[in-house]
Amino acid sequence: MLNKIILIGRLVRDPELRYTGSGTPVCNFTLAVERNYTNREGDRDVDFIPVVTWQKLAENCAQHLGKGRLVAVDGRLQIRKSEKENRTYINPEVVAQDVRFLDWPKDGNGQAQGGRSKQGQASNQQFGPDSSPDSAEDMLDDDFDVPF
Image 1 (cartoon, one colour):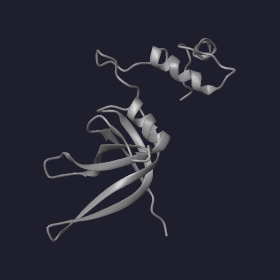
Image 2: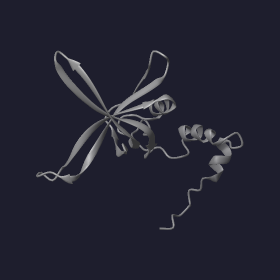
Image 3: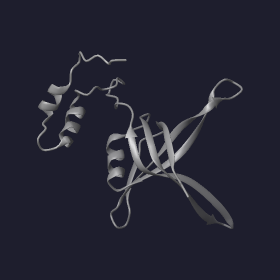
């Protein structure tokens, strides 16, 4: 049997980071995902899909994502059921196993930031102990032409 979901969409609001009683990080956010077809008015309908991430992925999403960011989510569908006052509620959600950031965060002026921002320099430090922000920045070439 297979339970796999891949979604690409934008965050509806900033992610919410919480911790379980045992201290495990959990992050929740909602993705707005357009459907492949248009309705009678010529607009695409949008589905709002709740996503949950756990542990280090949860902390990364909470730290680096915000409202409007474009992401790809790879995960599985989970249906949670709850009962209140003799009614059963079905709450589907996607448990993410991988979240890919597909755009750059925006700065205070609403402009997309490039790889040479202070935020980009800080992320270059994660490549390993031999690389430094200066050496990683030297590898960037603004005049690079894409061959297609």
